[in-house]
Amino acid sequence: MQPHDFWQEIHPPRTFERSPSDGLRGFFPAEFADGRQLRLPIRELADGDHALASLIINQAGFAVEEALCAGLAELARPFDPEVVVGLPTLGLTLASGTAKRLGHARYVPLGTSRKFWYREELSVPMSSITSPEQVKRLYLDPRMLPLVENRRVLLVDDVISSGRSIVAALRLLDACGVRPVAIGAAMLQTNAWQEPVSAVYPGARDRVVGVLRTPRLKRNPAGGWTPQQADIDLQVF
Image (cartoon, rainbow, N blue to C red):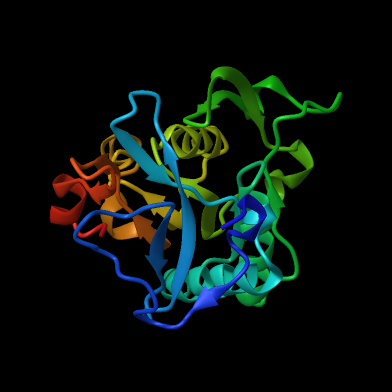
């Protein structure tokens, strides 16, 4: 596949083998709840022995984007959210589409670009697994505060991996007196997020939902990639 071909098409169930004998090569076939598959590129990590499946939602075809938003809306609906709060940058695409699917008139975007009317007490430091060397600040526009106070909030990001971004957002909302009723993502990437998120969000394992779930991959002797057993045991794969 060419790099620009990823995230453009959803395939019928069982189109691709999820556990080939010599390992996965080139892409990981992530599955929706109904078995439909989406090919995600395999990104090799710095150690050369491990890799992750990658999703960049703002490069996805509209049909894929809509399917991810629809899937998350259905997972979130039982929590009866009144407002969707989105994390920058890629989480904003998902948050907007999910809010529409839930029948909301708008959503609340968090941001990392400070406007002159922002208040420092409505901000927290934030980094992510994809840019760990960049420590930014995450802000809530003070004008948006009335939209989240005393409301049932669904917090949304595109991918939850290390949990750093979600933890920062939880701390920011906590400073506003808000605890989300649920956290949603297009993809839960490995189980690494569970411990740090649970430390600040009790009950996380029952209130964090993801449309797709992908494991950490390990290179096998044949040169392919196989899911790590720890992620399989915890039902991520």
